[in-house]
Length: 231
Image 1 (tube, rainbow, N blue to C red):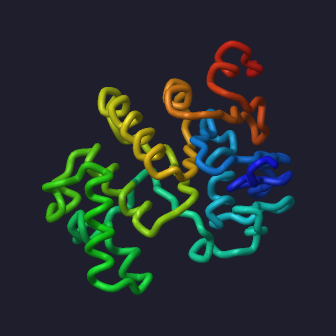
Image 2 (cartoon, rainbow, N blue to C red):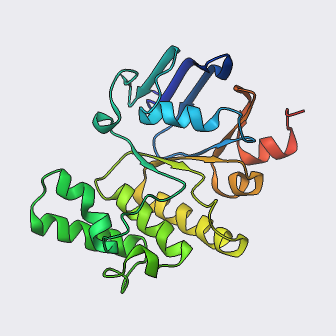
């Protein structure tokens, strides 16, 4: 019996005024899959991700998470975490406190929070940086802190909006491998939005190529590379 998808878009569409941002899109994403939404600016990929997170509601169609209809469930009640392109770290908080923020909001005990923060610090290779504030971190360290915070509460599904966009080319290549390693160790599904074809090809198990609100092609990186359907 095939595994139930962790995330499903069922014929979703979304308009902003007269602009059709997402046009009748259907995608199934498997548990533990590294999936990339690839396309140019304005193709609908970020709108699709925001619908998965609950920040936008589709005008038509449904969003299912782990088999349950999540279309009308607000973001804070969805079993999904999201890492924003800007990282959105709290500037007045240390690395450890940034990672702990969601755990405190969830009402965990002090000991449980400390143990989970320590685990996330090791996972994201932030040892020795726990007391630093965001302005004292490099771009790559900020990225890893944001990732650790997004993963701290435990999730089967992480959404990443252009996660490497703020990094220079060399650091992006290094961080790609770190992301892939963390994803494999956790076994969670990662869904990445990117406009960078090399990035998608390097990291993803499968890629959905988007243009003008539609899916042009879904396949493994080798299929997209060898048999592209994009014009």
